[in-house]
Length: 358
Image: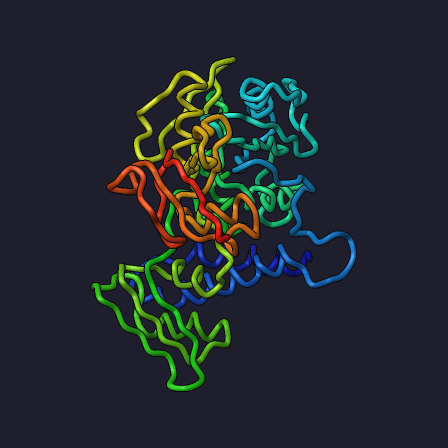
């Protein structure tokens, strides 16, 4: 472990001393690839026993979505959890009060959202210090991250936490790189792009691929990608997650929109509304034949997977097998009701009636 950490430090030192320009792009790309491999080795060791270092806290996932509170020790995560959910998480003015992961539940707009108060991380968590790996491993299972900051302490804490999460493969408020990477049996490295490239060239791509012992692949870019983007695609284990920054000022919380740090919401209602927006969930109401729709207990789906078939599978695994057609009322159809098949995409607050085969 110490050897791997020393190698990481040596590479980071070399990168900090290397000027960034076209002449050094190839060398820096190679160093970044080496660094990514070492971080993966550090966080997912191959030795048996000791309960894998990359494992998170044993918290059963429940509800329709999971939100994680991440931050340095004693910045107000427990206070925020208590105010939002009523779950008791020990609060004190000294550091490291929360030593395990405390779950709570919020009922909001018909959805059950699990909120996790994760123990305070420390600088160097991505390299195995403290309980950082457990904290960040659990954070990877969340749908949204709330980074809780203390307004009295420097804003550099925000950058430090982002660095720790980035080091563990969590990409905050980003989308997967718009590129295609396909391994093949022969033909060497084929590099194409539909846009002008200011960061990558064929030599840099070859050097990064060589570090992963990849000598035959097609790499196609549809945006001005960096070496980090290519490494993320090759690694294939990155998590792209929405994030909201929450700042505590005394007993008051307010949140910063990442896109516009000047926008403040000085109440918890505003924070909950923003969490809901970032979760991007879809509420669907069931309508038994001959009865009114059930608006009290909606079926909750991700907006990325919201077909009628997804709806059926969420209710019961055998429902799709018995499916004949569905009647839908709502914004996803022109007629009220409209007969649709399993592939039909539903919209938020649609009413659905499933007609089964006889």
